[in-house]
Image (cartoon, rainbow, N blue to C red; front, side):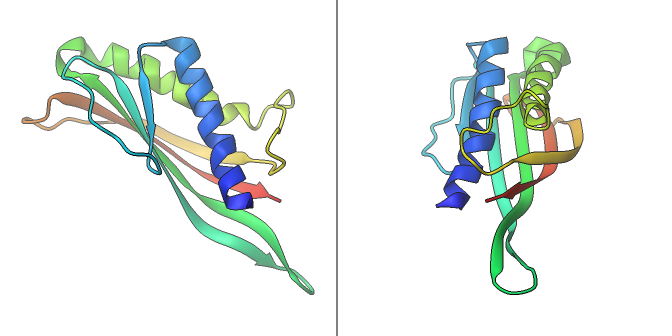
Length: 142
């Protein structure tokens, strides 16, 4: 199923770049069970939403996926924004890596991202973590 392969392509590059930059950061995806880590733990929550599944060319429909990826970078409030910025940079590096000429597409979906927004800081008084949001739109062909 190509929806699954598209998701796997993006999940893999995000997971790999974040772990490469800081192995103590947990990466959680919206399609997996999740228990919130402790107050001193850093983690990234990734949500991948599809907005299109086919394109109607002349004749039969072709698999063409598009959507949005949203990554919430969660860092303990007492660590400042530097930790959040470093993790956000690794998320952005993972997302943009699919556009590189050296990217090897092992999932056969030709993933691409467009403009990346963020990291945008969201701070609320009663939350234990500081939130920075990185988001982008994506496409993939099958």
